[in-house]
Image (cartoon, rainbow, N blue to C red):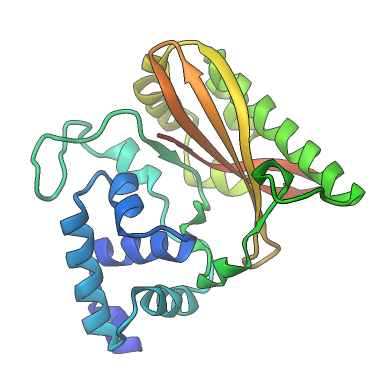
Length: 241
């Protein structure tokens, strides 16, 4: 495993982390602004190096090896050339994808089979304790997003979780937000889609997804990841697609 892991490229590792989160090749391609062909090539190479036949098994092995939070994809967005394109389509970087945060849920396990969709998925009524937690998580996610809607990057940075702030600077966060969030325009509607508990170390995460209609992008999806710190839900990752 050690030799196989060391042989993986960083691009293969980032793809496997998305697979561990529950993505398939198509959704991973969308998240990384790459073609499905490119993603399948990465997965094929990773399976060969790790001597497994399943991409899910390869993802689990990488997760077990790394054992915790990984690199912050925001580093690429904040420090890279925004004109950079995909591996196979130079200059074709997809607009609108905003991925940032110190934890990013790609660290999560192939135990994502343990995803627990909540009532917003239409899967039945949660008990009172779960309902109260869901309400608190949704409220925290909405309150944090509203800070971004207002362009208050300092406040949104200050309100984020420890891992988010340790992985990003205020200036970097503001620059990424100005580039990716501002062009979307004002929020017209933000409707809850799902709340999921992600069963991963150390204490699990909550992932809240909203179907959001912006003035300049009517069909966006906002995914906010939160952890509980000192009794409060804090945002540690966001994806707008």
